[in-house]
Length: 448
Image 1 (tube, rainbow, N blue to C red):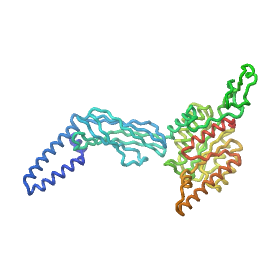
Image 2 (image 1 turned 135 degrees about the horizontal axis):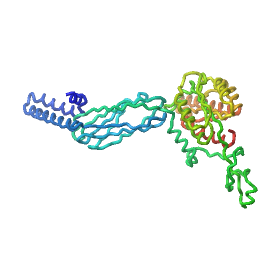
Image 3 (image 1 turned 135 degrees about the vertical axis):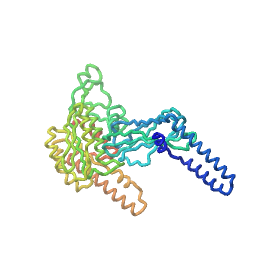
Image 4 (image 1 turned 45 degrees about the vertical axis):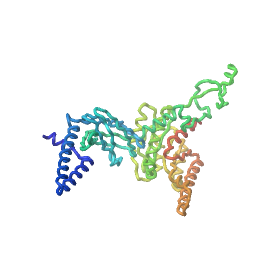
């Protein structure tokens, strides 16, 4: 009895059933004056009830089971499309139409999500979709609700709830990290925007003597070997390895600005993870600093096997704040913790010359002890606004303000370059590629 009551509670009428019920009711009302029409309506009602019973049997006979399983990675990537697959198995007596509602985490704010499909008798079907998380943290997935109706009649709809609670951690983008690694460390790098820098100096370990080809540095010609082989031979050098590289991430108020649903902090975090992976592959040591009002996270530059995992966990735990960033705290942390001359990439967002004047003396002090590269963010929306064709007086005002903002950012970069601080001004979506290009350039020149 309990089982039958559960069946009744999980049954719903489809729209077709309501239309048929409404027509039969209208015929019965009309039949109050014409007996023939009433009899027709009565026969239609009996036939309709019989079809409902038959539809019920098709849905429930011998269990009429529907199985569903969700497949997804345990670790998801922030700012990327993460694939999810739902496997459905039809155990009913007939082909069915299904509407699948996966109870997604509240962070995604997708209230009307569902997938419709048709499944043959005994068939297994894979339903695929993707989610695009924009914040790091724990994402809790709920049960899977499957609404089924027979393809033959489709008068009734059955709700089946499948327990599938699961928590997934959204980390800094591992997908982006692997893409950048592929572009940087493979031949694809030559066509995908990562520059291959030619070495200019000799601060490298000797590797081998090889035949000269056009484009090689003529200063590396080995004249003794050239005389023996009767062709130009040059000395090939190997990059110096195990150079310390630190990524300093500003997580203060200025870095909360969103672009394409991700904050500047998350862009900086994704780039830090991607470049750390590349630097470790090139046998350099990598470390991490984060700060806002105070200095908080420090990972010493190292090259051991678990270094990337340590950086990943540290970046995962970074929380944005509304506090004003204190660059004095960064300087004190670098002075105390970073004893060896290192390459430091500083991710920050300096929008005005006034704010630059406050932090310029501190950046200059850091640059005297280390090689500092300051990474600023270009506001692509303002660039688009400046390029927009002005048609009204309001458009002229907007263009002028946008151009003033862009000019001031160029002055900031010029001012930093004037005092010897390397500067990158990059759109958020191009941040990793531009930073890696700078890393390869500095490494090729032997400055680290």
